[in-house]
Length: 471
Picture 1 (cartoon, rainbow, N blue to C red):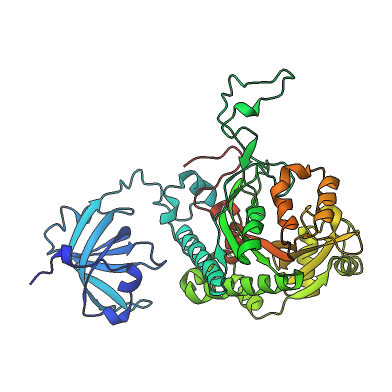
Picture 2: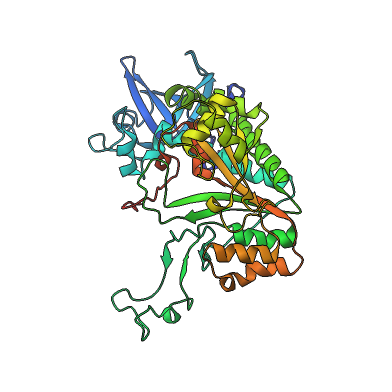
């Protein structure tokens, strides 16, 4: 008796590869990776549906009614539905294969024009066909690892009682004070309204004032932390920095927890546990994908992640870090002096040569850090922290926030900001102020670090960069 396809639930390729399904009838859908024909009157189809980096092999015999008319026309990229018996595979490396009862073709891919025919296609070329690159092994693996990291992030905070807050994408505040923001406007750019003094009349704009795409959800996170104690934001952020490098994006995702009744020491502890949890979850739940990256992209990624998970992070003041670097005898491209921001070469030296493990550097000079960071009693440093890891340097940046109203107002003025524009932020210090802290982790740089991918544009589905906004 033939099983009706409508009554048979779809089985993923990842499940079809499991030995416990041997003897079962399954329905598998996916895209053909390869087709090999045998003189014995049958064909082998390698099928993938994105659920795993591995393909399932389908045995399609010549007795199938559409064997010559359809199956022998299948090429790479064609989409099919296969109803089959799961049998033990005689080949090495896989427990099962599928003996097809029927093969239904959804769509053919013309082998003369399908751009994923050739092996060894460059990542640079694949960026020009972002609509097709998820079908490759590398980008399918990147997507699954990115998904696992995102799942791990939400689980980490939910298991600790944090509340997920959706911060706004459109804002009138510049969290970083850097001014590199995308403007949001409905004004007619061909006929921009101006005041008598020739300044743009933003009162005629949609929001009645200059607005931008957000660079961070931190300030809004602080609002909710001072009401709900522990919160986190996880969403897209934007920087109009004209940096056409392998480490910069104009649109990227940030994770930013904010914790009330928390100081810098508590902040550092949460950040350490956070990274260890993410890396351990990826190693545990994405073994096949991580083996792929370890074999094809960077032969040290698994070893590096395991080392971080098992390490106790070093805590090192900025002043001690500078002294350590100056005494190292190393010749750096950027000379080390107290008061400069540490460069990637300095951060990597600390993590890879001095301590050979992650390092959290804290108490940075106030002049190189943002206005909202808590001032230390020395008047020279703030309660900032950067988490440094081998191979990349900084991966997390954070601080204890300044909760003292008068100190924060003076800090804003010294940074060239108008406190009146941040009246609501200052209100948090007027009404029930509390010590609080938080940090930020860039999702794409985390995915890049975990996978070993060299270019950050290859770890986000649709990269946005200068002169690049396709798809």
